[in-house]
Amino acid sequence: MQKWITTTLSASVLAVGILSTSAMAQQAPAAAAPAQNYSDAQLEKFISASQKIAMISQEYTPKLQASENEATKQQVYKQADEKMILAVHEEGMTVDQFNGINQALQQNPELAQRAQKMVK
Image 1 (cartoon, rainbow, N blue to C red):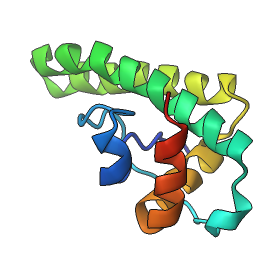
Image 2: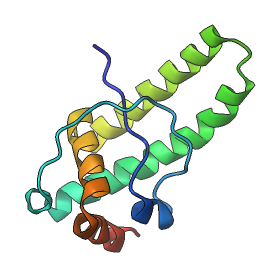
Image 3: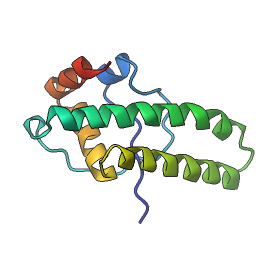
């Protein structure tokens, strides 16, 4: 089963510009761990991966909008998703870890605030 990257973060993290608003990939369910289980190092990896995913999203959004049929759109989604997965792996994370932190950020304002302070 294909794992998909979640490219949408909580509103507070979006407000500081980590990710663009376009979602390039489908959202996969992930179990969120409590905020205290995420170290600063894990959050830094997540932020770095998120920034890379945002750039990939910006690259592929025009291609997706220019797609004239469903087959072409699916190919664009697949290419973008593969790059997003690679970006997460390059940060030393799994897709499940990335999606878990993303979900925790959406559900936990304190964790989102911690991440917001870490954005460079």
